[in-house]
Image (cartoon, rainbow, N blue to C red; front, side, top):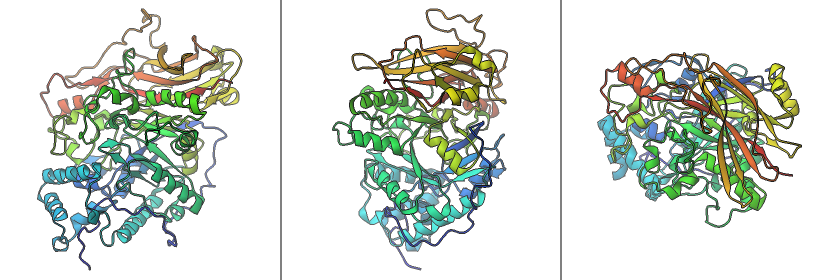
Length: 627
């Protein structure tokens, strides 16, 4: 056994494709035995963003659950969390993507388990000792590592430790073998993927990578690290090379744009110059969907850009104050480049200038949990990391990694999940649905949302097979309407989570470019519960009411509706203007996970801490392009 100054410490710089790999064993055979539906007949629920003990930060936070435990949990089995609590989903997921950080994949775990005498670099030795001293010191060590990564000033000798490539290769292959054992086409889909942790000065530019393929193809490459890079071009080059080498396919999903300080959705290219059509086209091809909601806040919209949207401030408390590691505070001028609705509007502007839309995104939600446990239910929330698993301390515990106190446990959201309209529960079918953007996001509830856009839909269509008609005469969510005759109409259906809360309302969010070349937006309430009793006043629908009893963390489905459906036409349609339309569905108020903790642990909390919320779902847009 050889000594090393870093012992696979972190942030491995292995970005080259590797050839001559042995084929991974335990590979599930082809998916041809699974019969696909002629068109998507059901929605599949999953998480495209989960971390296990192989992620350096997750391990440093105290996560000791390997990928196998994460997959077992997602399939509905009971596991024991890293803090010793029994954990089980009330309903299993249909698919899971484990996205451990490629930067330092499994390296902190290797460092922690190494003999102390083998570690000679002083900084690495100090981190090693901190991780073994206590959970609090381990978290501080992770904070230092994240700071160094954010500032791109890690010592060169730590970026390429001796033997790092071989250890990465072995850890990656072990991960692939585990995922392949749990992939069960037709019943449960386990994807291969990783997170590319791009972070410029602490501004979050992370992407999750999902492979369509099995282990025999994916084992031909190693995860690419983002060391000292500030633009995503290197990741796209890597994926181009992967597809050329293997014949496979992959996509990327940006996430937590709300923590990018305006850098995720810029109007320019990364150099600051005008975005070219080629750059816009490449980005759109590589990033068909975006993560709009997760544990670290909601990225749909913000009151700064949407002052007329009464529901625009959901899940932003604490997260709007600064970037990912709080090394840079957020100012109002940064906000537009950090939120998905504004990105959709900016995409129209860039398309008008270049002919290409770089931000033509479908939307999904996912957790970004670092506990190996995909939980987005408020009454069963296991938090961001082991330090935020259920306890009487987690609501008010600082989440500053020992460096600041601006964000506390209650700022986390119990969010979200990815919903995919696919023709089968297989890698190919779910991946292809993501590519065509026939997907939507929820903050946790498993509400069933469906939208079709066309030129001749009428209210009577809801009395017949409107889904079949939607595919025959229109386009589903994620599609583009070509110029037609008259005014576009949208068939919209929302069904409550069968185990959750009733629905308050369905809204259509429209964005367009006006005659002067400015991007605009408007929210339309299109159908809501008790419409005869809740007539809109001054264009605003009254609040649905509130049945939440915070003393017991309960609510009643005595208000709201179990389902809402309508056929809606845009009353302000201008055939000369580019536009997009997406649907937002709100539940009636329900207790937050903080309220459940308050009751469970008999806590007395500051009145400023919210105890209830209106959870929601967001569909992918339908776009309209003029002739």
